[in-house]
Length: 202
Image (cartoon, rainbow, N blue to C red):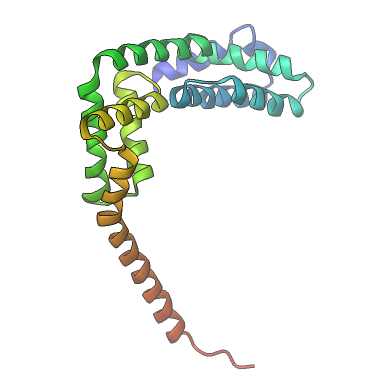
C-alpha cells in the first residue's frame, strides 16, 4: 500500500461514516468500494451490484439495506474522492469522445488480439479479447465494455468481417493445437504415473 493509499484509508476511517463503523464493518465496506470501482470500470454500471452488495452487507449487521447502501456510497467517495455516479459519467464522457475520434487506435487494439492468441504463451480468444480491452480501457480511461465495442466496430468497418469470427479462426489455427498438445502431454504423464504405481493387494 502506497503512502497515498494509507492517507486515504486514514481519512476514510476518520470520516463521519467511518467513525460509526466497527473494524470489521469498515474493512468490509472499504473492500466492497473497491469491487464497485472495478465493476464501474468494467461495465459502466453499478446499480445492480450495489443493491446486491448492500443487501449482503446489511444482512449480518444491525441496519437495513438502505443504510448499508449509504455506507457503501460514503466509503466509495472517501476512497476515490468522487461518487460512483461521477466515476461512471466521467468514463462515459471519455468513451463518447473516443467513439467520435479514435477509430485508428481502436482498430490497432483490435488487431493486437491476433498476436496475443498466436504468439508466445498462446491464449484463447476470450482471454486475449479481455486483455486488449483492459489495456485500452486503462490507457484511455474508459470502460472495458466500451473498449470492446469500439474494437468490434473498428475491426468490422476496416476488415469487413466480425472480430469474433476472425479471431476464432486464429484461435483454431494457433491456440487449439497448443492446448491439445498440452492436454495430451498431461494425460501421458498421468498414464505413466498410474502404470508405475504399485498394485494394491487386497
